[in-house]
Length: 492
Image 1 (cartoon, rainbow, N blue to C red):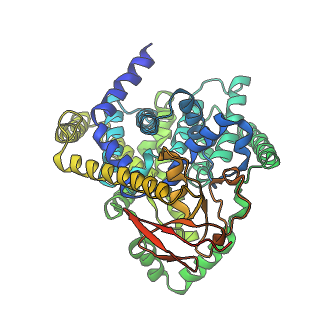
Image 2: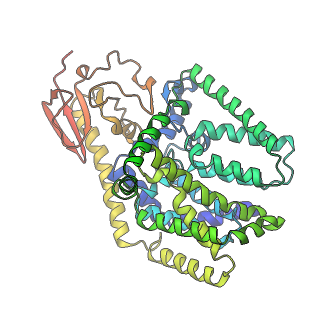
Image 3: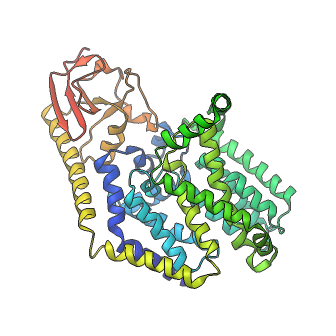
């Protein structure tokens, strides 16, 4: 009962700060059309339409089956309202962020302020850090890590119930979230090895069983018709050798271009230096840390801080070696790590910690909340909400005027309209060269369409202001926000 009351209490603060979530939601689905976030919901809809219908899905590299897809499988059974479902998911992220911080031994108020900090960061930078609250954008990895923390705290790790949960959790983590291998696998393995209550050989044996279980899942999912991206398909060796060659040619130039010129990471000029500064302080106080992990009562709450040290470093190293963009969704651990380490160093200065955190909490709560939203924030929400409504209404009206044809499209509008449009607008995704592109897509949606070539369609939706696409010039054109709707003379 106390657990339920605490969840409701944390949820109350999410409800009070609801305009922050509205800013994130309507930015991604109003200002832009980030339709990848609709994948878990569309998967759930297809499942409830017919379980066999989902076997046509070409799954993304991180299929986020657990927890995101499972969340929407349950949620979509209860309601079809997109905004309600996505608000519930955002609340779920807010709540498990609170519990994530609680695992580090932080007091309730500090953990709650940590969850608020992540939410407000998403409000300020909705296009980057706001991705934390979107399904399919890797926030679920921290829920998986939270589950591992809970397992690590258990006293008896020889019980069959612990073993089964550990094996299942490792297999689900490997299957659901490829970025788990990058950020969390090594730090968690180190934590389990350091914990004196664990026998290293047994842990390795459980992991090997989990890998076999994961391989079985991948095999049978492919046998059922799913197309899935597996780790050995990623050209990691090639990318690493290329980047090492660039680094050896001119180390300073490579690091500058990687971390400064090419970085699309908002607040990185603050967060990256803050992280490295906190890591330096941690190393300087390593002796005190060792003393704390030797004590039974402070073992786990202190040990978990190693995760906050190692996980961002693993992510930064991987992005640097492979040359992948410094996108916030690949480094969501960075602000979480900075906040957690900041609280760690002020943990014994309770008065100072309370003063800083309560001041921040009072400022963000009073300046903008459900009852007194910030006028600028309210205007931004209303503007992006209007863009969303106009884009959908304009598209539907034009589609009806042109005879409700099946159409072709660039990548982003397909899932966007399939989710938000009340009308059954069928679009086939194509590349710029006109090839069929079922990435993160259910191929069964194209059933009944015999020819998927661009020449076979008289209707198209593309992003930007274009009147000629796929070597065809439109006979009619209409602009709906940042989309161009085109009507062609059928060639076939």
